[in-house]
Image 1 (cartoon, helix red, strand yellow):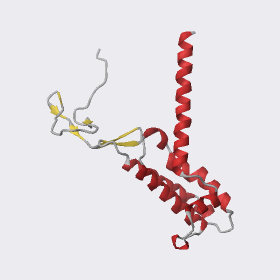
Image 2: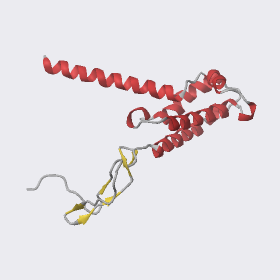
Image 3: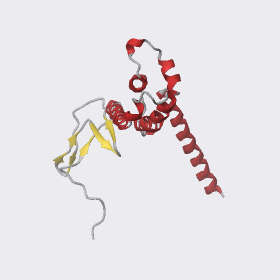
Image 4: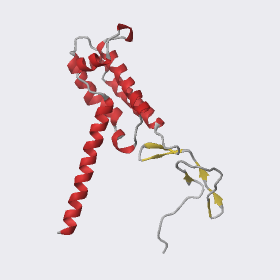
Length: 176
């Protein structure tokens, strides 16, 4: 009786992270394995250069998709700005932040891209154009919405606290 994992030589692929020299080749039982620059792992796109540009674009698309689902509320002129902000924070922002704080690290440029998208959505929902020359702080204050980067950092710190406390509990249980 044979045990273990079966490996498909024709479907197997590999990826090297931050590779310095190219030209290496991997073979399994004489069959060359195809090298890829990116792959999907648990729903996230992992790139060989270590960046997460595809993942950021996917999160932006998810945010716009959620925004379109609730655009009837967000674009209603009779709705108060604070209510629009609450709807945005409970429906749209979680779609954009989904696993952003745990799966990948964002640099300043990607964080700025998410902020730009967030402000486009808020401006559109409040009926404000860029030509109106209203400051971003005023728009955020009107809708009672904090900076996207601050919320990502807050979520990361909350997650880190959970991980840190969990490790302490495990250590205490083993010593007793």
